[in-house]
Length: 252
Image (tube, rainbow, N blue to C red; front, side, top):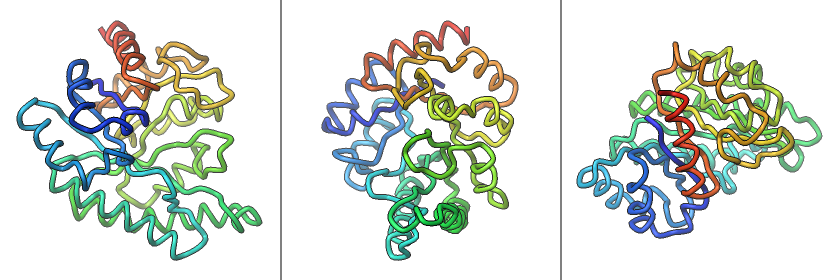
């Protein structure tokens, strides 16, 4: 199923955004930020699901959440925030949650490997909660240029090794890092897919066919293996609708 997501949505009250999204999509990946914090919109999600036939996924919060923090109190707080999201999603029967890996901040710049080590530690805790709540967690590959871990395919593969965590393949992020082909080698581990495009320099979130990432090649690699949802990550709803039309044409 083709769904939509956009950070811009969480600046609009949930009920209002639900009406707009549901007119164009049956699946919405809700970013738990701003006016759309999952703990605050549970009733609205149930209404969308039960009365409107909408389906939901969740993107865990991003602002000030760093599961790779080398400052242990902040790392633990970040993990606890994600664990609370998994618990809420279980209660809402939402089965897929996308999570960002860690970021390099502060003293971690002296030894960037520390942020990766902390990310792996955090993902082990998240993996246990994922299994406990029967919620699939997909760890997302990150774009270059923002001091994130797991911009490279090999780092992401290593981060989830030994866990039951999946991968959220983000085509636009991979394109900025020159990692599209490398990440597609791990397609069997994909549990979510984000589609948007760019010119390869920064994370523009263009429409799916506006950029240097080879969308058709990506879809061809997904087709025989991946059975999950395709989430258009757009700057706004209208560009999301336009990307959906492109995908529907290519997917037949």
